[in-house]
Length: 293
Image (cartoon, rainbow, N blue to C red; front, side, top):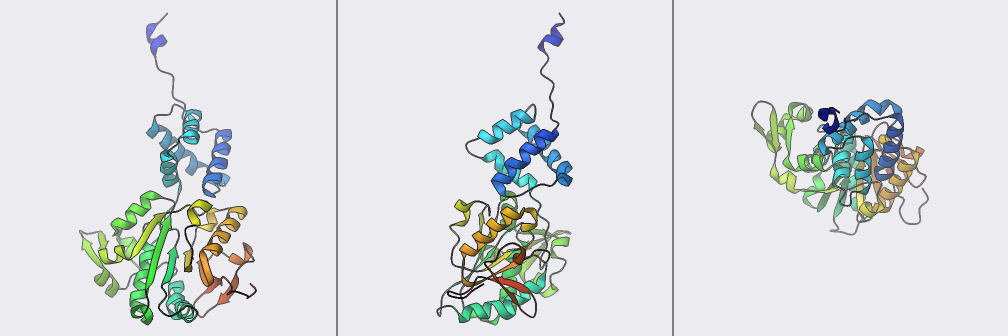
């Protein structure tokens, strides 16, 4: 017998079959609430193969068994980081920030005991453009910022983007919509194509990893006044959207608000909220105690 044939390692088979895709899709949905349609097949397969190569798994079965039974969950986090899309920029859908500083915050202040802190939660954080946009809008556009204490929380399921948010280094595309005065005030240019955000702004935001589909993660968020959850629910199916809406409802104080992305509608997800229409935007409110939705 040819000894070369006898001692050769098993041939790697890192293709993802239809059955593998279905199995993985169900597992990832249970863990994150994110559902991949069939048209995402190429995107999912490529990232699965990348993770198989990174871990040295010979095939999907070996990789998937290790993924399911890994106690620390490190590979699942690597996979979540690879599978989540983080496309954003400063002042995206800025009309909602205008609504925040012109209407929402003043209404919230009127319904709170004097001196009580306002809490704003931005989820997903992505690479930080959203929470930092909130912070700049507060400083530049809300007269009440000098009289009221505001806490900004920001969360994401992807730990890599949270690290990037705290580094605060941005491209020309990310900062393209910022007024020049804001850019000069809050950023330092580094080289030809990068801008670094002020460390004071970084310190003003508390970042954390949160899976919106995991009650163990979300139950620590309570007494929130305003939630920005924009362009996240489009990746969920109906059941996951309802669960996310209920998690945000539980996190809000009575009278608190949720801002969703322009293509998302809480009215199609949950009957818990009131629809509020302001001059700049439509938002969703948790009724005050005793009020009907």
